[in-house]
Image (cartoon, rainbow, N blue to C red; front, top):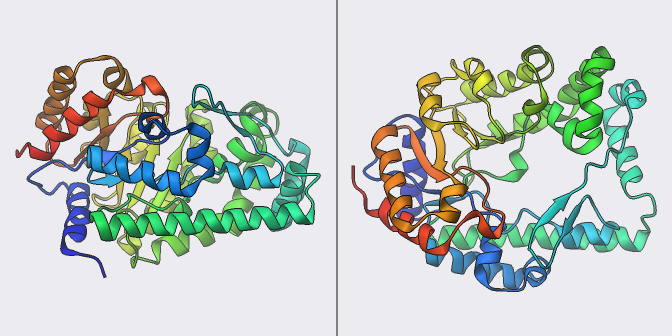
Length: 378
């Protein structure tokens, strides 16, 4: 189905997850909206014209030649959300920045009813988010989502067949802790921060219900299907842990992550953990995950300290946006060499943060680093 070169790229990352030696270090792109800014194409045109986004993504690869990608221009869905009447994301066409509004669609008073019938309440919250949605808008939005799905399928196939390059993981296999959904989509950061203190039992109950009725099905589908073109089987985003103390993490968050990791171990699957903020204070929770069942991408944690704290966890990252956006090519290459030499096996080099803003990176720095990594046999 896939070429020898494609399978070798996938295997290189798989080997890294098992701490097997690879001649060169796998190089993963964590480039999201920066590639649009770097491309020179109008920002709005990129997000509203799939042909333009196709050109941007392909030219980006031909320029930088990463071994795999986290995003191929499929993350932001402005046409779909516009058709629905607008969402919580807004595009600044002058700067290229994308702003997110913390707009909760439920209150803590809804928890008990939500826990009784999560599927029904997903529909209720959708109606609350788009209260004036017409049939015509819904049809247009459905067509826009189908077009976006088609673009994702086509661009992933193009990268697999033309460039022999895989994507790390599919967004459709996102099976994070259910707390993340209530944090980002339903209650908002401020609301759920208060709920953990004011009504912890109600919050605990609704999270358990969401996990049992919604998340478990997604997890079973993700770990039960190995016939795909992705490197990892499950995507886990860690964001909401940043607002928790240890006791809250143990109660509301960790039990569900553990079930995901246990399912990966039982099925021989791998989870890709994308950490926003820091996770060092919770590092001991991840210490016993079997080698090969998870890989952790670090944003703000010191990657060398985390290697000491989690010697059995393959780590991803190490190249800071502060450096890539302000330093010179030699400084960036020196950092890449140090990372590869000191981290050794069980390491995938990448940018620590999603490259999203114009000053997150300089083109000459990324070209120099990738040329070095591609040719540095160790």
